[in-house]
Length: 76
Image (cartoon, rainbow, N blue to C red; front, side):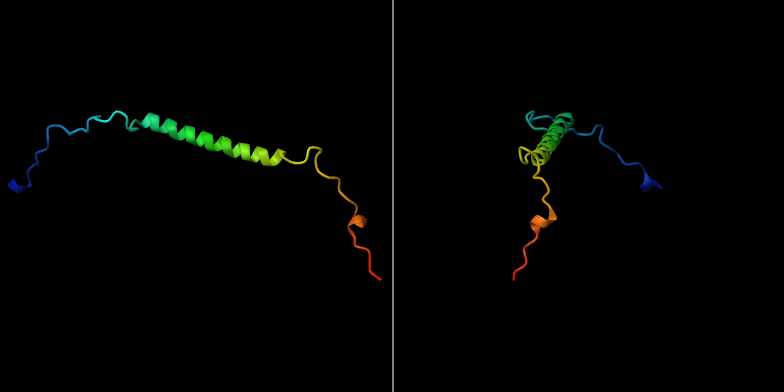
């Protein structure tokens, strides 16, 4: 049972240093950026919907015409 003994492990786990502080590796900053992008996309979507809903005629829709006006007169 000598071959089934415990394995030796390193005393500590090696860590990657923050050699490049300008990289966006901070999770809170990254999440803030994602939320700002989502907010911007949502605002653009609402603006497009608003524009298409209220960019019609200044006096509203045209009045409905009678059915007789739409008929073509019969040819003789």
